[in-house]
Image 1 (cartoon, rainbow over the protein chains, first blue to last red):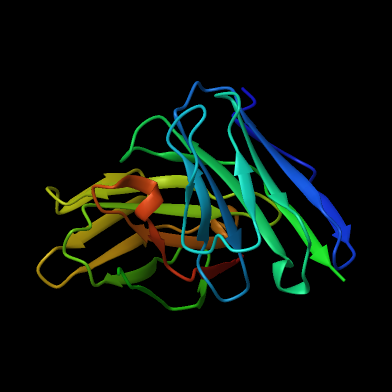
Image 2 (cartoon, one colour; image 1 turned 90 degrees about the horizontal axis):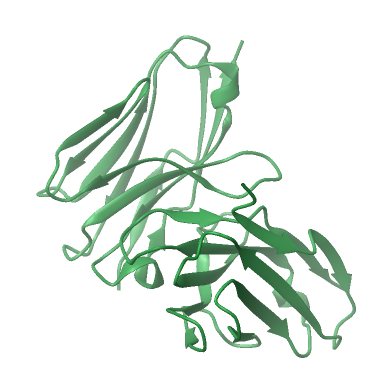
Length: 112
Length: 113
């Protein structure tokens, strides 16, 4: 079972460049999330989606945009990367509000 | 908003000993408390969870206890093994689900053979 798959696993960007992180889940989950993980901090929610065609802001949404055109995919975009966006990004999905969330393997992004 | 404090930040134990990680939360509306294990280079994986209507839950060598009055919950790992070495995260979630989740800052557990 693939579960939650993130693409790419590693990326180095120059300040000002743009990129899109792709998250795909094969569990038919309604809810999908993007988090960032920084040293010494817990995971923080960037954006989330409660179903196909919906998106909403999380705790730290500035500098990011998302889209959920298909139920199985949740895309995270950086329009103009900044060094402060250097982080490890995790996508997750869950079938219901208060049930287990399944995480992808992460994308390590460095902005220089 | 919710605030989750997790202690200790690092923990070293001898193989076979027990490990305990503690988390406190501030929002009494939190009612779901999962624990995640994150191995190096991988995403977090749920290892056990507990809901606010239960005081304790056990799954083989892993157990979680919840004290709603004191607003704290703990992860207990008995008979630790080298493969238990990882970073463990607690989380507190209200009825709004994972879009309202607050994660702890993590505990790096090292099991020494």
